[in-house]
Image (cartoon, rainbow, N blue to C red):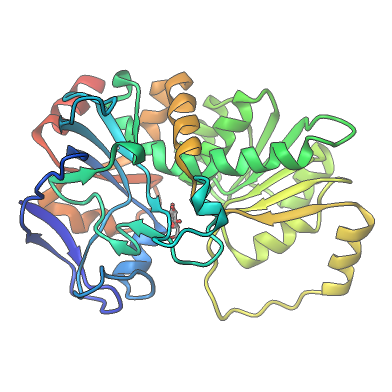
Length: 360
Ligand code: BGC
């Protein structure tokens, strides 16, 4: 069968290769991949800056954002052939830490976790993939290919869960959220914020096009001006920083409303120094009772919450987030960056094409 194969640490070796079809172990599902989303982490792996091959070999099957159709399922697994499913990315470390032991492997303490398509485990970028039922999540059949948005949504579902926990004891409920960046993570964060009934503001550099249109369709206000101006008028008590751009991170942290919670979700380029008055920033954080935290990955609970959030969303809006689909044979085109891109997906099976035609 065909699979997208990379050699972590060695850029340029990626290929659409033939690998052996997986033998389904007794307790596993076999899933036919329909679509695979591409994100910054995949690009980092392809650039040789991230990723680990499984022990004993130097290659890895890429892909951690996927949606697929179950072709085989053991009885009693809770799944049946035909189910539309998404695989959870992370697996607990083999010698589980306290967090992994209780299913909170997204919070792994000792770094011994593994991740499909990223760290020591083959990903979902193959025509057929084995999947453990306890790491599979059913998605609404009506979503079809849009189920590929479940993994990025799980990342923001976890961020919002953390925000809810932190704000739980706040003296007033969160009313206004600021999202920096209108890429897939920013827009999905806006979706979940709007579903929570918050007044959501999205800031991005793009002045026109799909990003502002989508943000508004999701129920958010869209701004392309300075973050400080938006903060002055909106006074957000929740901020989700989704760009990872160092200057945006600092600007967002410098204009929080009192007792705000800021969640950092972006991965930044390294090696770029900024001239920041850390003392002034520290004083603002301390004197205004701010909480700033980082968040990555999501566990099974967050994938389930993501599947629910997507099922409740406007499919038209979700469909517009997928700005480009390329067939598996042309998969490298998915790596090109275009200004109009939000989420690019690689379509694996003929069924993917059929589903897309039906959506259009
Ligand atoms: C994925 C996470 C993963 C992280 C680091 C992100 O792109 O969405 O699931 O934990 O990369 O490997």
